[in-house]
Image 1 (cartoon, rainbow, N blue to C red):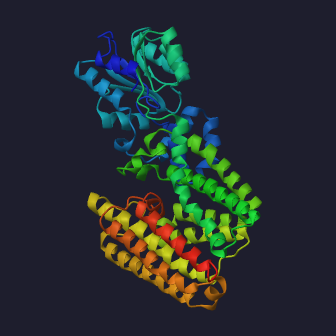
Image 2: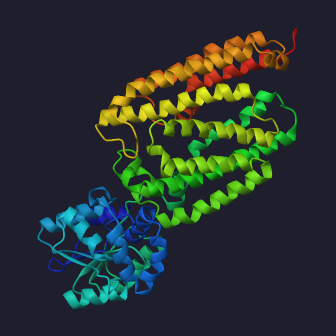
Image 3: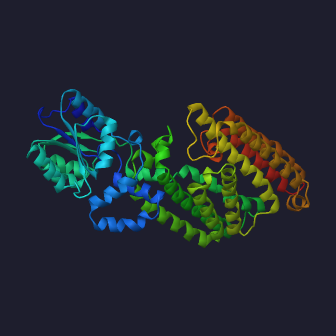
Length: 490
């Protein structure tokens, strides 16, 4: 809440005691656009909605809202509310004020919200025939209460038509130019702004740049090849890294929009930009195709297009359906790590060797199981069901056993590689590579210990990127590999 809003609320908002307070829904009482969310939810549950929507719109926007509202299954208890405004309304209601919910959203949506809050004596909303927005809303309020006989809380440009016929305005989470215009043209009773971040900041957060660290795996084939001096492989691999980052962000946007209901029931994920209402689905649906196109362009320039296509196909399949299939989900997660190696190998011109593939298969399966076990442990502690997951509490110990087995299997493959002719041909002193086995085992066992103790709150690679012990292990790993490459006598 900004300073103006804080002062107004502290003063209990000076308003005419006999005037009803009429409150808008979308963007005001709620931080979301209910029409966009209803459309998204309806389309995700039945793709035929996209074909039918133009016909519904031809009968009027109010009819479109009504049809979409019928198909939107939501829990009003988990929607993101403007808490300072709700607190103000509770105080006004306790003081005997009449509170009215007036919205362009469909009546079914408005009544569900009103029923949950228990603050409103009356609900005015779109009814399938009349779209209660702008001038229509102003006219309905004047018919009900009289000209200049109500106080109206709104947030966007269309609310100017209502404020100019109201006794006073409450400006809620509005852009600066609307706040400024309202202050110049109307009697403003309060300005309430509880937004924590601007929409560009929220958009950057929704792209999850901290997850890009996983895409550093594209450099692994180049590093394993020992080709450190040629410029073109490094340029191509850097482009491939950018391609995977752009595509991953696009998929994260799509995933967050498809998981809105589940995220809002999660104690941590409900703060994500789409779930919290900091971003609307329209923003995500506009940016995701752009990021995906950028990713494909960079992948085509780098030579990693096949790898990126495989990554996108696996990611979308996982998010839409496969995350619900037990065991299939962790194998897909492991494959998503591995396909980054193939993309990097394509870009660098150094294809992934069978030894690297064998080692990475067990390593990434272990990391995928770490991710799933950590999630299930949190759910057990919080006594919540696993939404869109194919596991129960009884599966936890078995998954831990599988993950630890994959950890030691990766060490076995690494040991076999060190004794192979391939290692003797690639390294001047391959016997030094035995030092990487205890390092890798220590690192993976430490991840499992952190998971068992409840410290693993994110993807294991993201966790490792923030963990100083992991950085020390990686530095020692690099030093051992470099020493093994140096000619004898150096």
